[in-house]
Length: 114
Length: 110
Image (cartoon, rainbow over all chains, first blue to last red; front, side, top):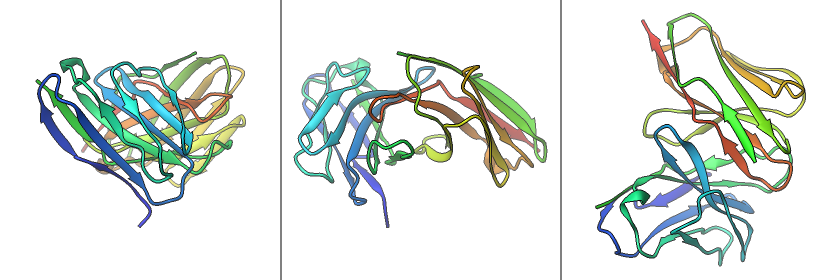
């Protein structure tokens, strides 16, 4: 089944404890992206990747890192999480950067930083 | 940058029609997407418009006017399962970046 998977789905952690949220897609998509979703603010892009080893900042990159060593994986790293990073996180992928390329979203990761 | 506005919430009755408006101001435009998102779940693709006019897909239709920076999503014959948030997203001219509006929560009542 074609899908985007994320792990973990739920995570409660404490300030300063490094964590990684994994994202994987099995559709051979070139483009991958991370969003956070907060009430009243909608989905905001954190980082994106146009292809392997190519990553760039989105609208809210502060406090996050990403890597794209393989086409299928795009992990999100929080080196020193803070309470303002408590949010619902979505990973998404699309085939390429062409005109019509819908993004497929993962199931989401609900992160709470105490 | 992009600025995308849509109403926060709408209520409608089962079997009725609801129209969700989206206005945008952009420095570049490469199409407009509508996504549906049920509470706590991932957004799922509904429609894509890049040319002016109406795109119809079953009970859902989406309209675009590029000159007015305006789109709407029309939901017909509303069903209880249509209760969800509807997200308007504009694709920038460069790259694959999507900028989302805040979403419109639609509540369908019996």
